[in-house]
Image (cartoon, rainbow, N blue to C red; front, side, top):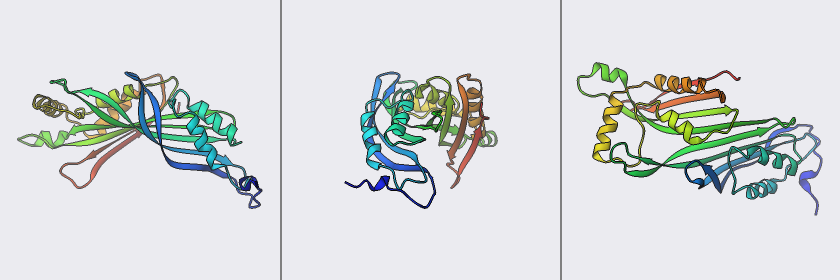
Length: 258
């Protein structure tokens, strides 16, 4: 049969990224506590296309994904990228894998347990020189109490749920659990899936005694990441879904590339 994708194209325009986007796929990821965790990922896979080629072979992306479906982690992204370049005869490759990551978390006083989900993402690219760039991303729900509201109010202070998103480049393998713990310690209080009355009292008082603006949150996270010799680059953002406004508060910090 005629291979239309391999036919020449006379427009002389290369394509930076071409491939498949928004694939919903069951994968197995490694976690620290249970060794493996089954989850559903949204995956984007791209390669470059030379100026003289009409198209890429879309089905091959899915075949590669199926080959590695049982071992998706920061450890083997380089292997997947190499396979993409080889199979699709490409000079560069890019992959993004986003998935919910579940951690069992105990309430602070009652120790009641429940699962809480975190949005994690692995992004990797490999260029024509076979240099691999990896970025780990995690989004963590938090709770904050407004320092200004506490200072000026006779009774209480307004609080809200928010989220912190951190993106990292690193030298050695890192666990998502470590990033999540760092972020949760940088907020007024953690967010839990199960809270009894004694836990709710604890969380409320903890937040009140530890008020933070979004500026405080991003600076606290950035300070920890800056002092970690394993981290070569990072960005961190915080967004508070304000309880007394119809808008969010937002802050962002990006480090210099090492």
